[in-house]
Every structure is written in structure tokens, then in C-alpha cells.
Length: 154
Image (cartoon, rainbow, N blue to C red; front, side):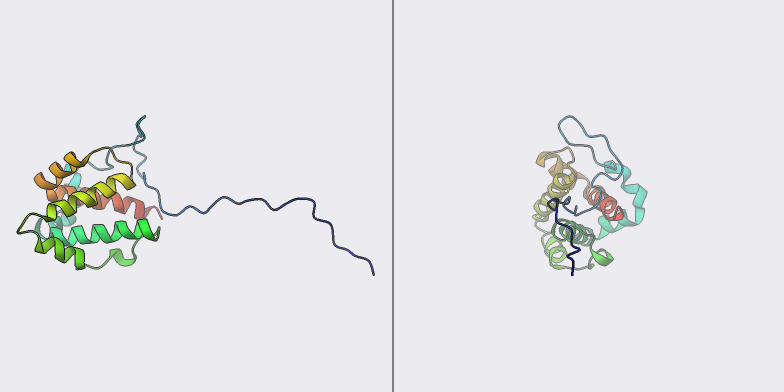
């Protein structure tokens, strides 16, 4: 009986690693020489999503909580959060409870900074503080829209 097997003449090659996550610059905003870009939507583009802007105005804790949940899913699992997250989670409740003291501002600034870092958006903590303090609904809406762009790219 003859051996019909052919000898191996080459080694297996590495394959490219699988990328996790969606497009973090879905609108193809220009990237500066410093490697950062502007927000995909301006601060006052919040009126382009009136329903979301109303939620951010009257129930900012809900929008904050869902932004945080969605961002965490993208960071940890590399995929959008099914159903967009729950309306009331512990972060929403903490944010709402701290409304009276104003300490929830620090929570929002931290999440805004995480959004900027994830999407390589130009800015700093001082600007994050000013935007969150002076126009919280617009800032929350801007953050949500940036997250949604990546989610929609899947």
C-alpha cells in the first residue's frame, strides 16, 4: 500500500486578530495632527433629537444612566447593549439622589471624559465641567449621539 500523504512544505501563518467594536468615527470627522477630532455633533445639535433632549432636560438621571450602561458595554464586551439598557439602574438612582447636592456633576464629567477618550475627541476636564454645568441636557445628548454612532456601525 502506498502512502498518498504529501509532506508539509510550509508553516501555518498567523491570522490578523479580530477587531472588537464598531466605527469610532462613523461620520469621518477630520482628525488633527494631534490624533484627536471634534465631536460628531455640536453642543447645540441636541435639538436634532428633541425627544432625547427632553429626557435629558427633565430626567437627566435616566439619560446619564443609559449613556453609562451603553458605554460600558462597548468598552467591556465590544458590542452594543441589547435594547439600549435599562431605564433605571443604580447609576441613574445615585445620579438622581445626588442632584440636590450637586455632586452628580462629578459623575457626569467623568463619563463625558470617558466618551472623549474612547472616541479621541478634543477637549479637557475644564471644558467637560463647563459643558456639564452650563448645558447639561445638550452635553448628555451630545454624548449619547456619539455612542449611538458607534452602536449603529455594527
